[in-house]
Length: 160
Image (cartoon, rainbow, N blue to C red; front, side, top):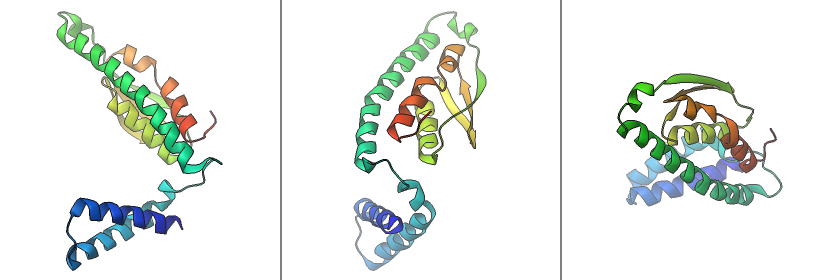
């Protein structure tokens, strides 16, 4: 069933975005959606908590304002570092390596993307549970993985 749901979701998205309903484009959409659903159905529809996907979606929507706030605060800090005279000399960029306690692939993907969306940090690489993150200053590195990891674990029902 997960393959069928993934296929229908992707094919519907294809139809909306392509806007072309001739045989050629529909056939391309079917083939593409079929191939991608065979490769990724387990990522979209794995076993969930009792409240299911609706609960995850709700918890993710509650996460969005928090990450927007973090992005805004980090943006202000990066702007302060860039615009204040003499602050550029105090930058100490480096790579931070940490191991996450998250287990699900989707949780790790959300964590990596959340880190990258936050100015001053970028996820360079993820190998199994080990994250390599470039941080502009030690202040940006201090919070990793921290609260972000805990919030993401809560979204997807993982216990840390």
